[in-house]
Image (cartoon, rainbow over all chains, first blue to last red; front, side, top):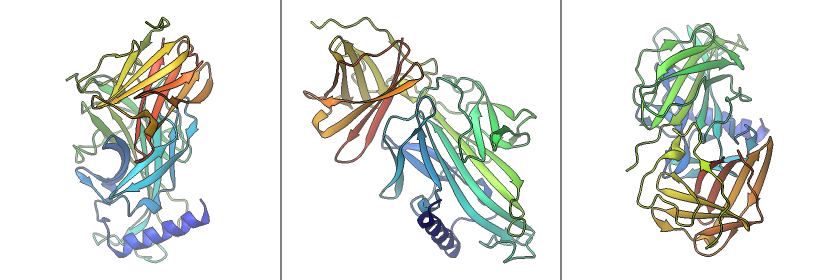
Amino acid sequence: MPATRTFLSALAIAAIGASGLAFSSSADAHGIWFAQRAKQIALIYGVGADDLEMTKRLPLVESLTAYDADYQPIKAAARVAGPIVLVDVDAQPTLVAAVMPYGVWSRVGDGEFEKKTLAEMPNATVSTKNVKYAVSIQGPLSKPIPALPGHGLQIIPAGPIPDKLGTPLTYRVLYNGKALAGARVINDMVNDPDAKEQMTAADGTVTLPVRNQGLNVVRAVYDGPTDQPTLYKQIEHTATLAFTLAHAPE
Amino acid sequence: MKKTLTLLFCLSTLGGLSNAALAHGITKPQHGGVVQMNGETLFELVVNPAGVSLYVLDEDEPVNAAAMTAKLSISAGGKKTDVTMVPAKGNQFVAKGLKLAKDANVSVLVIDKATQSRYGTTFTIK
């Protein structure tokens, strides 16, 4: 990451921490995903109907990438348009993807989460680094979606996207590019965020009915091992896969 | 009447994605080509011996091609080619001399130069 971006990220995390923004005991439910706003691709932060302040968090975004039909990168850039973050691409993408580290948060017992590391809160019972990932399918898939660079946790469809809601669809959850058992998955983090989470099987798969004849945002969460045990006890990875089903002709 | 090459276009087998929606007003080809809708934006791709044309309607209104850019990203046989189209009359963009191979995946991106708004879709040629 460029030094400037690292500095901006640190500033953004500090600002979010200082303002007490949105990190509560339920913060693990929040994620990032892509959705259409005024016919443009937008990057959203929130959960359920909470479409939260993304522009403020934009400096945290570590990577924003688009991919063509052969999954080769296409130049993509974020553009702030009022309160919304849009994605400008140089060519029509098949996928767009983003990674947003969300800092280290700790708490003692049932207390409030604070933006502190384990070193700063040595008696913390929970101390977690958070990373959010998002992938959106924007065009027809001619081949399976590969593991994308930088996406520690990723959801991929294991078969064709169906035409109709209610049709079962198998997803595979990848952790560092490999199938992951025990990831917690729900099939609609926008319209059914409190659904009972389903666990992926040994081969990393879980099969769920496609919930919406429109935007679907599938979410997977995995509490992975720490890579800096003096600073946090775990890394919470939250990944989304967004895709849409077309509505009937009008 | 222009002689149009006999090319069959179809939606992807994964046509359930957003590109397949038929929505507003005009949804049929106006120039002998093949249409893809994305929301209320209609893209019509026409292939003829002289090259490839693209016509764009936004909510049934022809866009002003001169105020926009258009690019085709063509994937075929493991090769990718980007082609910048040239604004022509009205809502038409042209790529003179361009040939499209069977099974090519043709992604279209039109950008409004004033607002930077993007409008796109994907055609698969059979």
